[in-house]
Image (tube, rainbow, N blue to C red):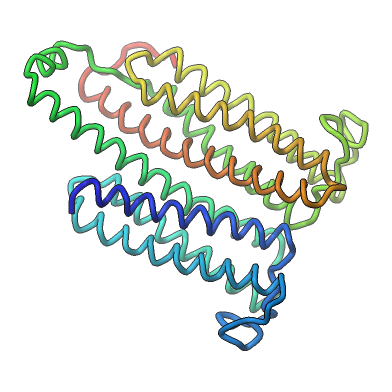
Length: 332
């Protein structure tokens, strides 16, 4: 199977995974989780559910999640059969398949059995990992395609190959790699806290923005405390990712991919902050609030996918640096 077909398969898998992530958010925000009662996989005992809004939202999400599982399985089989030399692409496809199955099982268990808010927050976290894995698969295939185009250009003009031979090897330091890993891990923690805010209906715990109920430091109990902790964690996340973006752009002029990923992560986290503020300011306008909440989640999904891929690329490039010419300094 050629790269073009694998690319489109990865695109399709990522798009359906995107719809599944979006659908899960719609189910949560519209409180349609029990739109089919406690039945699974049927809806109120029927294969075709009654035409109520809650049941249609829940059942549509189930159908899209099933399609995401099938596309993930197809991508996994295709990459393990036709890209045996690309262990990274095989890993991305495997992670997407594992986590889409885990989140599907957790979703089914939440319908059949009472589930705590803490566990439901994990459900969203696992679905986000599945989506991020599909994003990494797309970016990895695009990188492979660009590499093939570069090889074709060198074959047409051998002088390009000579330039590459004499060019210094671009490197990523261990310090920057570790900073990227730290940012990615911390992002997942903030994701979990945000999901916990949603599943405990604590979004209204802090009215107003940037102050919480008119106070710099409000009470830390109940929904007010949960919402405030999420705000503090999000503010720190902005600082951490902006730092990653700064070092990615300033310290890696020979690695345009790293620079682009750093800039993308920084822009996404800024948009994330503004969508979060919009959620708070539109709590009394349900339709705008729903749109802002979905935008907040989708930007977060894109941000986490970019950070995961940046983590993998920094790991790969730091290993390349160690093999070719270990850096003597420790600067980020």
